[in-house]
Structure formats: structure tokens, C-alpha cells
Image 1 (cartoon, rainbow, N blue to C red):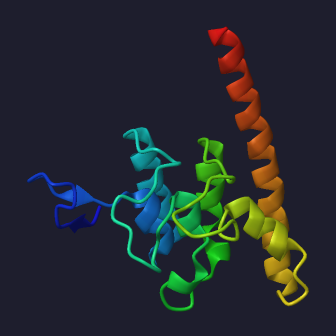
Image 2: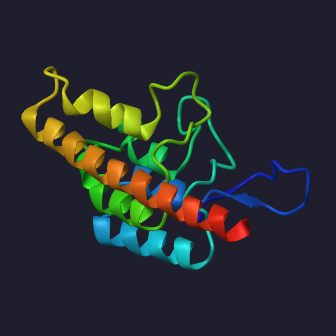
Length: 155
């Protein structure tokens, strides 16, 4: 994890989660997955907002980081983040959550809906977004079903 200056008012250094940093890295996918799996195993929240946001860099959640094409190093494509996205969704990442961005256009499921049909996108990218849309829609069904069971259990 990358260390940063304390931003929380304590003497403890604040660290950015690998769930945020790895999708923006130029590491091989196996390295990204290993770091993200370790972070999840250590209790990192797949829906947590970045603790050290940089304006215009990543002002969001792990899924947002995976989809930030403009901040990928070199010629890396967001398509390369697919295994990390699948891992996050498998562990409960909610594609409907707002980041710190203004408006709904940055919400992962909204992006997927938009780019899955965007004629300006290359066919390879449209296929990626269509796949993501399917993953996200399945995730929403699972998340809502889990919440319903939890709510019924409380009542």
C-alpha cells in the first residue's frame, strides 16, 4: 500500500487501499488480483470511498478506480481491469453507488448502460461494457435479495 501524509488529524499515516490503487497501476493482472484478494481478506470494504481522493484522479470507490480510463498508466485499457472488477462484484461491490463526482454519469452501472450501446465505441469496448452491464445487473439482484433477507430477519 502506498503511504501518504496523515489526513485524518492523527499521527498515524493514512494508506490508500490496494482496491483503489491496483486498478490504476500498470501491474500484471495476477499482481493486481493478489493485492486485491489480500485487501479483501484483511477486511477492506469493496464499497468504501477512497480515503485520500485527488481531484480528477479517483474521487470514488474501487469500481470507480477500475473504470477511470483517463488515469491508466501508459497504454493500459480498462478492459485489463475486468478480472479485478469481477472480483469486486463477487465480493459485494454495488455498481449503483455514487462516487464523489457530481451527477450520475460516473456511477458504474450508468456508465455500462451508456457505453454498451455507444456507436462511437469500438466493438471490443462495447462488448466489454455489455459484459459489465450483465455483471452489474446480476450484482444488483444479489445485493437487493441479500438486503431483503437481512431486513426480513430483523423484523
